[in-house]
Image (cartoon, rainbow, N blue to C red; front, top):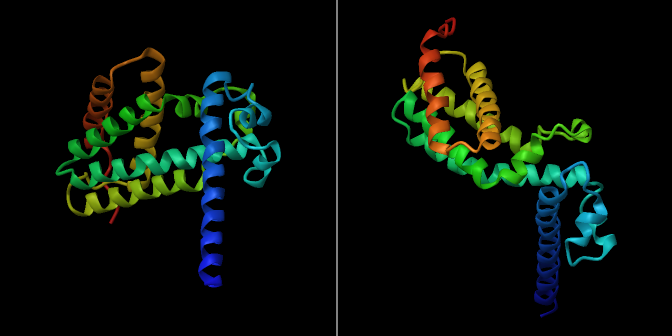
Length: 207
């Protein structure tokens, strides 16, 4: 009986820890949206939760760490959707258009996090953008490109350069989409046409 009680106690403790951590991340998302990254302080984030002030530091050392956790959470939410689109693609156009459309739709519906990432506030220069889950997302894209190239879905070119190009266009065009409040579908068509028109001219990989 004591073993079961101990297990329940540990389970409850872990549940509380996960709940507290999530509460801090959710509060940070709201506060960053309201005040902007630069103006936000740890105290602002704590005030947006029901937690005691000291509880914050049990989970994060700074607002930079909270933002990095927010980035990881965002990456975890969008990655399965992106992979599903890439896996079902039957040709290069579907691979590219599905990826862009899914990413732009996600950004449009979570513009707060993306806008904060793109902030030019001086403090952002100290924040790591290459968090573990973000990097994992890039690695997944590279792996999917390699498989698609092997299967003839994507033209035979350098997967690393192609991955970097897709990511670069996705982030820059998404920023323009939000700035000008462009439609997701129109933005995805533009980015897709850009790739379809240019990728055929790329050099093939050396044997």
